Amino acid sequence: MDKEQLHGFISQSTGNESNICQIYAIREGETVFDDCWHGFKTEDSMNVNSVTKGIVSLLAGIALDRGCIKSVDQKVMEFFPDYTVKRGEKTIYDVTVRHLLTMTAPYKGRSEPWKKVCTSQDWTLTTLDYLGGRKGITGEFRYATLGIQILVGIIERATGEKCIDFANKNLFDPLGLPGRIMHGDSSKEDQFDFFMNKNPRKPEWFSDPQGTVTAGWGMCMSAKDMAVIGELVCDGGVHEGKRMISAEYLSDMLTPHLKLGERMGFMNYGYLWYKPYDDRDVYAAIGDSGNIIYVNKEENISVGITGTFKPRIFDRVDFIEQKVLPAVM
Image (cartoon, rainbow, N blue to C red):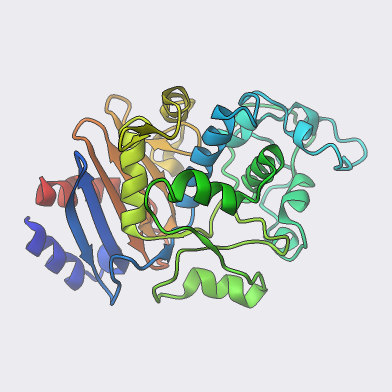
């Protein structure tokens, strides 16, 4: 399948590929694929859902490199001395930044309190109410999109900057990418539209009423944005000869810290990034609807894919390796 055939395949798809808006690939510093569907242009953005988590992991690494965060083993509550811990809660004092990054932080309740958090005035502090519990630190993987909100609060308190400003100054601007802009609304209706609207978006980032951006979802990026960030990861944190993130943090971020179960495709998990194969240098930041940053260090290629909301699409790694890579290589 060549590039033209790949374009036609996606255009005619009625299955999982039918929601793809953009694909952008960079190999050895050169753009090798740039294509769009459904009226999207290269510069357009889309809510990339949980790929946002992968970006927040990079921002945590930058804050760590600068000494704003002392270590990944620093206790979460050190960043929130003004937070009033609920009576009888003890586990919360043992939770570290590493627990957030590896999704092994414990939370109360069986499900995430979306309504409570997303209708509150401060999503970070409200999420803290959910952290901890009677079981203590078990090391069990628990995928918690809302839980990562605490990580953005930590970045803001550690750096003294709003996370969106820190991201623009230390990630997007140095990479030559558009700075993220605050989305500006957080109503129930607007949140629904943010997920469901299939039109191109600006390079926005959803936020709570305090102007603190969402950590687990809500960043809008183009496939090009994601491929460029993937290239940074592929190149060990160096962009155009300048180091942006330490090699030490990136190595730790991509190192498998957990082996996931069947629901997550038996992939390995680092710091909010996946390692799909045990024996290959392939990594990914993955979001619902097939949004993905794919990094293949063996072939020195990074691929970004955006897609509109479509249920039950999680992992496009196989699609990239079976369809995209043959077309561009």
